[in-house]
Length: 348
Ligand SMILES: C[S@@+](CC[C@H](N)C(=O)[O-])C[C@H]1O[C@@H](n2cnc3c(N)ncnc32)[C@H](O)[C@@H]1O
Image (cartoon, rainbow, N blue to C red; front, top):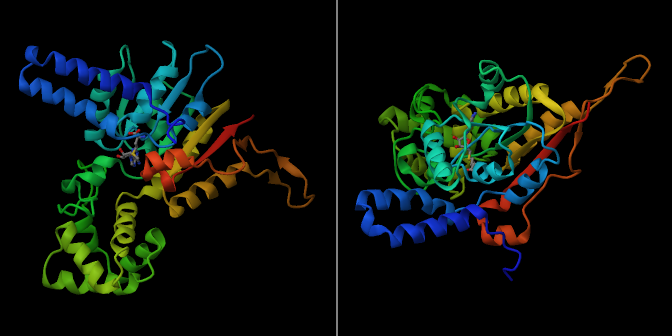
């Protein structure tokens, strides 16, 4: 049953390093030993979603210098595998809006890969062109967006994204700037709240939930994730509503759709002919957004009077349908089950 399971080289490498560290434990003090194990363990427990497909798409067939961007570095699982397919002249750019993830990923990748010299950028991918321009980079050959939150966001209550562990209602990807989710839900009026729950969370009981939030905040400031979950559950009577409402608040708070739209239009402009943009999404709301953006670039410009093609599209779809994980991948990594990857290629 497991014969098709892909075990990444990094995983093998991490297991080997943990084994070696364990043998050498006497030479390390306990703090050093556990720090190394802590760094390597996640790579064994987690799998980058659609990794094989990502590697297939961006595998290059020539030895020219290429500029490759991981726009959502996360914990560096995709990036650490992508590193292996790059040559020494290639430039690898790592971006993340979350400084803590960027630092964790850098430490992890450098612990399993030697001679890696990426350009690290702590910024939103919405600033892609500006960040590249100040580094004298005027084109890209491949860019990967793996949207949604990373597993640390889910797992660590203190970031405010998690439904499982209590924490301050924060939900910012970049904790150095902007208002928190708690501040946002106190500032928005009930109508606006209801609108974002429907738009970004596809929540059917939006109006009841928004009203309940409106009433609760008159009595006491809503400061923690568990407080908000209780209000949502008591007003919607649906155990799935917190997930949808949290998603909506996160998208609105971090202005995710605006950053995606801005970034993709910049990436389309910077993309070299023959190269690709890949976007992985985990939810129909996000996938629809990507589909609509790509469609705009895939259409020819038609002359309104003659009905003839005036400008041919510079892009084409890489695959007719979005790429989804195989049954084996879903079995091994259930988190991947709702993943979809859309890829667009520049042809002229
Ligand atoms: C699903 S994770 C990426 C996982 C990554 N591919 C890996 O292999 O570990 C998404 C990451 O995107 C980051 N992110 C979200 N919005 C962003 C934005 N506008 N610009 C840059 N990074 C962003 C999050 O902080 C998070 O670390």
